[in-house]
Amino acid sequence: MAETRRAPRTPLTYVLRLVVIAYLGLLVAWPVVLVAWNAFHVPDVGFTTEAFAGIFGDPQMMHAIQLTCMAAVVATLINLVFGVSISLLLVRTEFPGKRVLSALIDLPLSVSPIVVGLALVLVYGGRDGWFGPTLESAGIQVIFATPGIIMATAFVSLPLVIREVIPVLEEIGTEQEQAAASLGASSWQTFWRITLPGIKWAVIYGVVLTLARSLGEFGAVKVVSGNVLGQTRTATLAVEEKYLNFDQQGAYAVAFLLASVSVICILVVFVLRARGARVR
Amino acid sequence: MSIEVSGVNKRYGDFVALEDINLTIPTGQLTALLGPSGGGKTTLLRVIAGLETPDSGSVVIEGKDATSLPVQKRNVGFVFQHYAAFKHLSVAKNVAFGLEIRKRPRAEIAAKVEELLELVHLSQFANRLPSQLSGGQRQRMALARALAIEPSVLLLDEPFGALDAKVRKELRDWLRRLHDEVHVTTVFVTHDQEEALEVADEIVVVNQGGIEQIGTPEQLYDEPANDFVMSFLGDVTTLGGALIRPHDVEVTPSPISEHSLEGTVSRVLRIGFEVRLTVLTDDGEVVTAELTRTHARALQLEEGVNVFVTPSPGAYTMPAPSPAA
Ligand SMILES: Nc1ncnc2c1ncn2[C@@H]1O[C@H](COP(=O)(O)OP(=O)(O)OP(=O)(O)O)[C@@H](O)[C@H]1O
Ligand SMILES: [Mg+2]
Image (cartoon, rainbow over all chains, first blue to last red; front, top):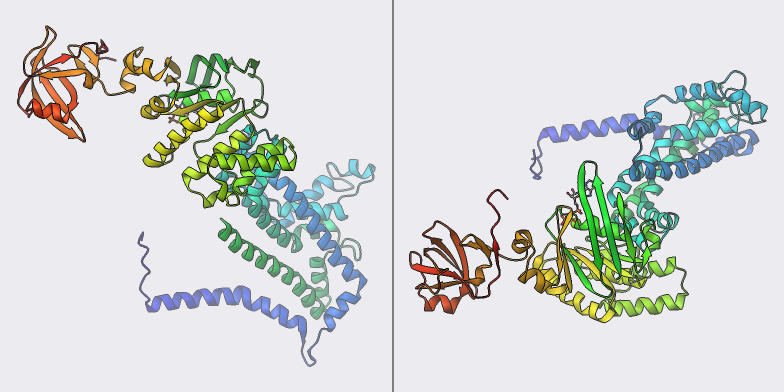
């Protein structure tokens, strides 16, 4: 199988292609297209942007969208700073427990977001959480408030920057950093002038992926936010709410907005990857 | 004295990489650290630079104790075997790096960079990225970058190791000329004895974490301190139980002194202008001798011919090590 020669085209080739296309089509493409379609199309009425007008005219919906964007941006910034620091720590230093930490980082990907939400409530819950009452008495409410939403969002998207950056850090090695040090650069100068430019593309991919993931987070946020209308209801929670309240058109419209942002994020990554490959 | 290394030890786990190194490198000279792979040359160079901390011992650079100084403060230029070019910066920006860190005025940096690029013959490549240079050009850029900070010592780790033989030879001559121009105290690592003999003012032979001998190329070649140095710096053979260089073995049709040994030519190998003979003496010793083509022809040397082998008068010999060594 080591041959690079392409396998001859047999009927099986075509069958396989058909299966793949059908699989992706039925599972991903068609449902997403239908969401878009239903966002703009009402039976018996035809095409309309009424649902969007409804959303943009509804201050509480606008608040939900703003909250989602704010939480996603803040969570992404947090994961940018911590992600790069943790990557540097894991690749450039030796310490006991390094492997355990490395394994822990993948946890958010393998654990259900609902579990993440419940875990956060156990720790930060205002009434009987482990740490929550202390914070509460200091005037900081985490659960059922914006900090909880940001924490839940940051938790679920934690590994994305790290998993992009680590392989690149390993690949570029330490020689350039040592050369910078021998030329007099402090560790901080070396980081800004040498290391960061070296991992720039990986950081950008990681940030875009984190942003896309954060915008769409539902399960963990649902548990910690309390879903209070006009206060802690995020866009994804609003989609569910509208759907359950038979405002299906509205639900599709918000879903369409969320999906559009994610698709744009994916396109950005796609273009950047192509450019990055050319630059290197 | 520019660099003084005293009592330096360095271990990696159980492995002793450097053992009680004492070394003085004079100002303004070109010194080679020569030795076989894994001998500890890179480790020693990195200890001098401050890229590696010794377990014990001290490093003094230009009279200042540098043992506890970090690499940033030692003002050494370090050139890595694989260039360590800053990939995202242009050639000019690479060279300017150390000066920008030192916050020199812009005009001064520009002038200095131009001067250095001129020196390393890279002026027309100033705006290229390192990936658009050849290996030899990248190495010259790395050298210019290290020289930009006007280092008190310049340290090069196998600077030409990754280049092909021809470019290597060119750069080696160029390094020598450059050093005669710039006069910065320079230490370079090599495992190529020809490179060391040709370029260096002084050679330090490093083997198995220790120093075997320090001396000028002539001293090392003519009076090696031990059999390791003798065999590392050139070909050796044994004659009458002594180590001797093959070109110091005289081959004659009849005995010329009481040290002459009789034998038969078992192999004749012609390499360019010289002929390498293998002679099996009647005592069962295998002796290699080198002579010129003309000389060999005059003697009508062929396999199976009877000859006498004698050490040339004044040839340097030393007792051969016991077979166990
Ligand atoms: N970081 C390290 N960890 C463990 N062992 C090391 C480390 N660095 C070097 N060594 C060991 O120390 C010894 C000396 O290494 P060093 O790199 O100084 O050799 P060298 O003389 O430069 O060899 P070469 O000519 O192959 O570059 C080697 O046996 C090497 O395996
Ligand atoms: Mg080495």
